[in-house]
Length: 323
Ligand code: PBG
Image 1 (cartoon, rainbow, N blue to C red):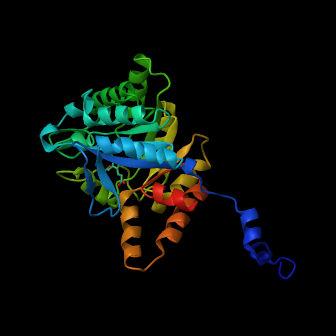
Image 2: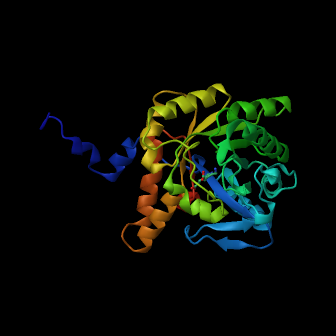
Image 3: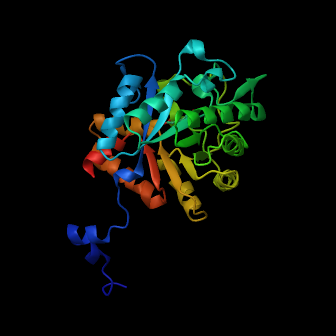
């Protein structure tokens, strides 16, 4: 009680504040998303993601080397698939010589210790832009599981360390885990996008990969952002089905979900600060309305405070330069 308690005492100098700070950022917090495109020497700008690029395989190798030098130890791969390779069942997704499979090998050759994570969902491969197979205007769950698990296995065979299913089909973690076990990939990690909400924050990402849904939206499989308890149900299922790490997505507007999970489970939690969050900070700071670096570091640290152990973020490289 005032004046016996003066809370400002502990904030009186920067040394004191440093001593007492509970959460910190380190390069080990970050997962770097990378967009891969077919071709040579291509560094393609993404208009809605200023400062972020799609890179061809040759540039992906040098990117991995440069990330490693900055102490960044994990990448999460996404591919932009040529229109003529897209179909309803994601045949190209399981091509052992597909772009994703080549990208995994390229990075593992360039930097063997780099943790390579891969997105597993049909959307970049789907002629409908959906995460699962479409039948009569519906995204069908069970037939999709077979393709997703084949896809996961082909990533593991190419050398991926972590499979990250982002599709939100029911039972995908179990299907993938069984497939990996059968093929003796006992050590492949599954990082499940367990609490993934149907969100308008993904807009710029869909520009980057040309993967926007061709009809309707993703609300029959991704979660309703009006719900909180559902996130717990999803993660409990995924953990039982064999997920090693679970993910909450989008990030900043969903910190309550991260904290709910952190208070309930011991499984490591990853957060995904998604493309729309990146675009918003880039746009506002370009106008001079907010301080880019300060706000970036504040947001990233808030993920840690909420309970995330890992943060997938397009800001990783910019952040490590400042911490
Ligand atoms: C694919 C996938 C998406 C993102 C990651 N994996 C898009 C979507 O579900 O529509 C979004 C990432 C971002 O916005 O940065 N299923």
